[in-house]
Every structure is written in C-alpha cells, then in structure tokens.
Image (tube, rainbow, N blue to C red; front, top):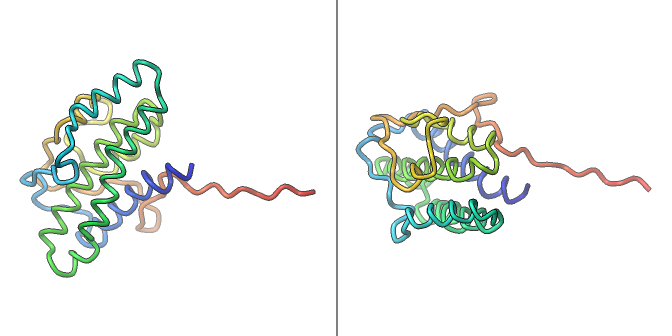
Length: 177
C-alpha cells in the first residue's frame, strides 16, 4: 500500500494538482508537444515487451518491479529535476511541457498496471482526456507516445476542487491488549 500511495498515487495527485493550480486543468497545445523527456535514453518499447513477457511467464513481481523502476521512478525523478512548481513562476511554457510529459507517464503507468490494479488504473487513465479510451488501450500503446488532443484536460475525479486520492492511506489500529 505504501508503494502504491507514495509512488504511483503521489505522481498522479501531484501532476493533476499542478495542472489544476497552474493551468486551471487545461494543458494548452499538448498535441504539439512530444512527451519524450522522461523516457529519453530508455527503450520504452523494450521495457513494455519485458513487462508483457514477465506477465505471460507469471513473474508478476518482476513485472511490477520493472514498472516501478523503468516508468514510475524516472517520472518522479523528472519532477524533482525539472521542478514544475518553480517553473510555474518563471517559465509557464516549460511548466506546461513538463506537465504534458508527466501526463504521458501517467498514461503509460495506467496501461502497464491494468492487469494488476484494473480499477485504480482506470482512475489513473480517467485523470486526463486521452484520445484513446481506456477499454481500447493495449500494452503496445504504452510503447509509443499517444496522439494527444490539442488541449489535454484534467478529467480526474475531484473532491472539494482537489484530486481524490488514488490510494487512500490505510491507518492501522493498535491491537488492544
């Protein structure tokens, strides 16, 4: 649960929140931005084939570790490196580009986690108005950037104007003696 909440859920909520805060939920010109920065130097097609092969071989732990190491970790490091929360104050176009790249990472993560956490993956995918419906996407769609609509919009479920947590934290109650 902590890996889901702290890594995948945090990536999702941070990205959606920044889109809402800095761009009122609309990333203008997304269709003209090539969202390839996060995975530069990574052969994404090979990573997708590796994950699919591990799933077909019932090596689920290795498939999930690969998703975390090759998709989620680079996306979270990208936030740390690019600091979109600072770019929003100094270079709005660069911030927009960073958020388009992060939305693409979320799309890829949603597709790759679909066999493991289908309901959560559907929520991830529903976070933006991606061109292809969730039901129609397949593993091979994760290997190449999607054709984004001209303006990528946040379509995530919101609670009081904020993104609803993808994985609410589980609070364990102490056992009574």
